[in-house]
Length: 90
Image (tube, rainbow, N blue to C red; front, side):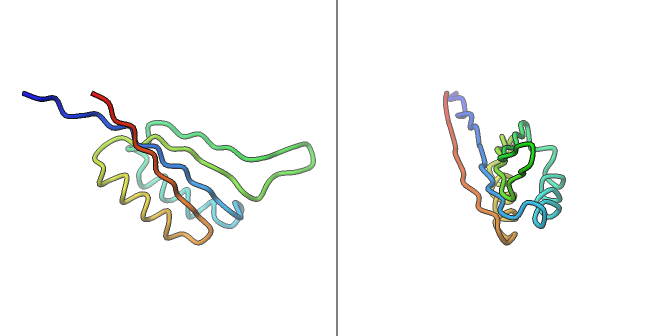
């Protein structure tokens, strides 16, 4: 019997105007929280500056259908761009 290939799905979520969009994005993250294995947020900051844009990397687990659904809901939010990376191995 052949073993099914395991997938690692990474979603890169680019958020423009973080202050306005954060609550809608966070709601999607909350809705799919049981399928987010890893979450890493990145944005530029300094003592007197905080970037209005941000990038969140998500490692998604579970059926591919779930990752696609989450990706679709994030893309529906204005000012959000989502890029998908899929790594497979035996």
